[in-house]
Image (cartoon, rainbow, N blue to C red; front, side, top):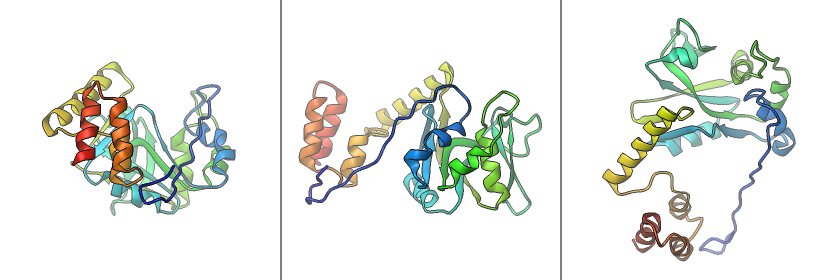
Amino acid sequence: RTLGDGSQWGISLSYIEQPRPDGLAQAYLLAEEFLAGAPSAMVLGDNIFFGHGLPQLLDEADGAPGGTVFGYHVSDPERYGVVDFDAAGQARAIVEKPQVPPSNYAVTGLYFLDGSAPERARGVRPSARGELEITTLLETYLGDGLLSVKRMGRGYAWFDTGTHASLLDAGNFVRTLEERQGMQTGSPDEIAFMHRWIDAAALRSRAEKFRKNAYGAYLERLANS
């Protein structure tokens, strides 16, 4: 794609079907050829993240060695994989759905792992429920001293929208933000424009496509601002 200054940009994406629900760690086995030794970021499709400074937080994770996951303070940690911190505040274990949680920090569905992830995934054995657990894969990084846990503070929102109720909560949250601030949340067109990946003319072309709804009007205002 051509940018406003004439330069070129592109991104490599791949759709890889999981034949059976054999666990999140299986993703790295299925994507091994596509990754070709490169680091990667994996986000679960039913997770929503929001917060000022989130791009910077992700940039830091992208440039870090080993693996990086994100801890989010929750009131019901027994439902999640939970981070166990030592006295110095460093992660020493990740415990899957503990009866007695070692902390209130749940591991979110966002993972930055280096190029060794597929090789490590090959060493993961199925759990009691027959899945290749992402927690087990992360523990290999932790055992090598290569796992960083970044805590998402009070200014962040994380939704795991795997149930009807949590999906409704996320929808109401996004609607409130957009109604109160008059700005779209997670608009790929706005993000591309702000990063100068597309120019105002391209943004107006996108606005024309959605001219019959509020999103098109929003893009038109953005292009003319």
